[in-house]
Amino acid sequence: MEPGTAVTESRESDGRLSLSERVSRHPIAAGIISGLALWAAFPPMEFSALAWVALVPLFRLAVEPGARWRVYLGAWAGGLVFWGASLQWIRLTDPSAWTAWVVMAAILSVWWPAFLGLTRYAVFGLKIPLLVAAPIFWVGLEHSRIYILSGFPWYYLAHSQYQAIPVIQIADITGALGVSFLIATVNALLVDLLRLPLFYRSEGRSRLRPKQRLRLAIVGLGILGTLIYGAYRLSRPEFLDGPRLAMIQTNFEQHYKSGADWQGILNKVESLVIKAAGYDPKPDLIVWPETSYPWGTISIDPATPSDVFAGHMRQISDGLTPDQWRENERESGKYLHGFTDALKIPMMIGGLRYEHRPEGLRKYNAAVLLTPGSPAVQVYRKIQLVPFGEYIPLIDLLPWLTVFTPYRDGYLPTLTFGREANSLDLGPYKVAVGICFEDTVPHLIRRFFNETPDGRQPDVLIDMSNDGWFRGSAELDMHLAVSVFRCIENRVPLARAVNTGLSALIDGDGRILQVLSRDTEGVLQVRAPLDPRTSLYSMWGDWLGLSCLAVCIGIWPTGMIYKRLRSSLIGRP
Image (spheres, rainbow, N blue to C red):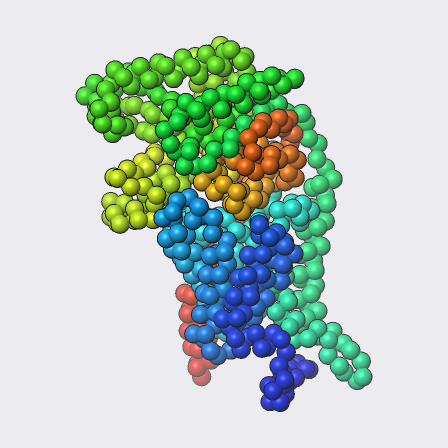
């Protein structure tokens, strides 16, 4: 027994317990404390330093012997408090959306007891130190959330540190999960220090415990290495002047944007576009927010048979004729190209896109780039659709899922998933486009930089979004915070045009250089700072998250094999 380990036993016998020991005797309180503290580390509170200590009560449960059902209940309670408070903005989408909020919080809260189960098995069953087990399992489970439905890679531990610029530079190697790993490691170290004091008395002197010395050295080197690497990366930016961008920010509440006053919406966007075009110097590109062109764009393959095309009309609207739709195609093209030609400035339009082909109708959430004097358009089709907002998962198998949506009277969203992470050409520049939440999805944005046919990576990343669903809530801040990591991971500037905000410019170091206030309309005129650097993350992807997830999946069978081998070797004469 290491010196000082009997101290806890003596305190238990005389009824005097430390604060951490008292918390461990009340696991539900411990879980709730962790949930509340971690929530406060993110927007809207943004007490980011709390993330480094918030998980201590939860991690303490991972090394608490006995009372197993109670510790899992405590972990679930903490997860429910955290996700319930964090996702409250979901209820703003529709009066009926409180059910989606509750269900989503309940599902995500299961991650916490799952983490506890894996960690307790590693600590008690396989004798793996908490300092090793906790960060691996936490990061592995964080990474697993990108595979659920369309993925929800929000509220990583790392995202609480989006303003700690020197700390988050390691994301260009590890992705955001590397920062999460470091934060989880610090929380685990604090638990070890609470369980076993750093010093013990021997021969009248205070001495460092050997085990704690090793733990301190490991974590200290991790923190020091992170800060040194961050300082190195920040000392070497050689940003170049890129294209001038005018990012349009509208301020439509979603119930108005979804209403019938489409001409009123277009008139307001037009006025902002004309304002942007009047700036001196003129912008190289004007970017509209997501779905801000209310009528959408249409592409009809001439090879589409007339009977097939007539069937497409029935899918779009009852009573709509092919001739009317072709007239819509002509009028929409005439308006958009005429507007672009009159301004003599390229425009990127956000709107629905209907593509009629012999094999069927495709309806995309798209970004369309128009160039003055050219009848051709470039199109990016959204790849990562939002479940229940742009498509209903499993609707044929489970039709009752419509109760979690704002859609009634038989209408359901039926958008088509885009497939290609294609960049668009803007003169000498290559532009990658994310739509809506796509700038929060690390592996998707990486595709623009890793799947380049000509080997040339995009110069600028643009996100067009509609956060009017969550007007005025913490979702706007979280969306911006998460997008910061895409810039560091791929060393690329990001410009955002967002309905209700927050439209912003972020450089390749993750610094938010300019931002428009929420709930306002206006034009954010920026010059993108081109970043000539490349990143290992763009080449390697989520190697850390995948490695940790592999451990999560393999820990049980590996542990069983290890135990059987160990018992057979011990039992051998």
